[in-house]
Image (spheres, rainbow, N blue to C red):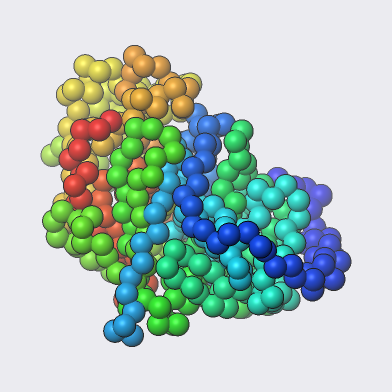
Length: 425
């Protein structure tokens, strides 16, 4: 992607910036926590392509071995839907400077500076410290190289001290016609941060959830994720809950299952599940992941082919998604995801891309586009234990079910919500 880029060159550039890093300016701006709405419309018709690139990167990264109190409560951080990614506002420094960060359970490093249009300079707070490390991260469709700092991070009511985060020297793939996220808030397993620093490659960076729990700011070492399906770009339609679950978002029983032991899904928020279309099993019990950084529901190639045949859908060359006519859509059956002993139903309406947003992906109002995609022939063989990921339950899945990542007990939780059976699309 960057054939002329050499890590040593970036290191030299980084060292040259350290003099600037020693001069810290205090911000006099008001400290607020506004919700920021982004529009990421450029390339929206490449949703499947970007999701497949991310899936491949997740598998390759896991295989590469790069992963070498009762007074506390829980805090809700509202989220914003931007058609293909989800963000929240995070404050860094003292006083805090706000950044709109993409929420990612598929990575665990937090970093900022993607939209500064210049090298990130540490002008946040007198508490900010350069750790002496570079950070290098690949996301499939994006790249980040920066310096690692520590400072106070604010997540709504949470004030997390000495939180590690990256400040951008170079980013790729996080822009758009009206901008994009300022960076990423990584809330996945902490092991994903191991091997991302240079020269201290064996060092790991505690996540915001890790530090909030260690500092006794939250009562449980977990984060709950709640979304509602939306039919317009930029809607405020969800929240993160650090340190507990928001029972008001759940309509039924919360089912917990252990994080899968099958590699490479075990490196992430990985689970085992069976997928059926109607009464027909299209993916036998296999390992995959739940991922907020993926837009669609991706299935191994064999399962995807069965889904296409059973629905009668055709591949739309313009959008890269399966499409059906309104008449075909009226005859669709539900998809059933069996996780643990519980079956979660994805009704036909939940399998549709919101029809009011067809134009966003370059589609036609004459068709219904489906949010189930092929994970890709390179990694989607569907071989149990074969070193692959057989599915990814992306945000299209999470908009219908409450999700909990319990890092403290190595569990993933799922529950129906008031939107599980909503006819909104």
